[in-house]
View 1 (cartoon, helix red, strand yellow):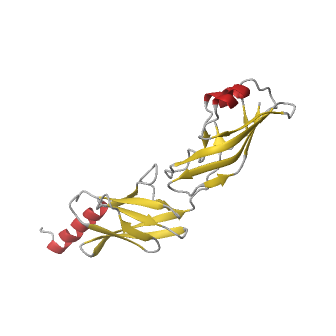
View 2 (cartoon, rainbow, N blue to C red; view 1 turned 120 degrees about the vertical axis):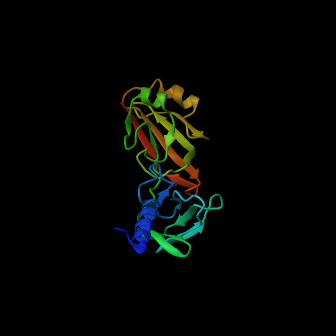
View 3 (cartoon, rainbow, N blue to C red; view 1 turned 90 degrees about the vertical axis):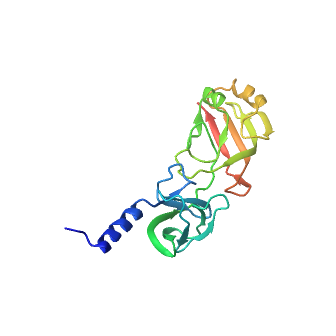
Length: 212
């Protein structure tokens, strides 16, 4: 029994649709169907037909072709929630996908471990770098701390050091003082500045570390 041509055409179209998908190259896990608000999401059309010319259309977000690839699109989202994206080939929608637009996380300074403000001297010495974002965030964010003020108080509350750092690491002079600190001492990081391609230069909240 022969299969009618129109049925073969439908089956072939469904097969091609299944072989076309969208990935967000701005994410660590590119296959997750999510975008971030106020961020240029780099979406790539993945297809076995590498010679095809595709277009991408979004219901709510702004879409522009990438200047470096004809299969990538820069998508800028202003609204939270679900956005509908349509992959178009030869003027026809061949695939519809749904992406959740999430709030772009705010940078928050931390050292050694996220959300911890009690550290040992050894932990600080081993990793004296100040970070902006937790490593669990799926979005690739190239933002770094550029400078901060460090104030060190001994266990009696006396100021034993203060100075500026023009990098994302505690400088050698401050580390020398930290090595001699006892339990109950404090390391205060203030006027923390960060900059990156995703965020404008900004001042972060102070960070108060207690030595344990």
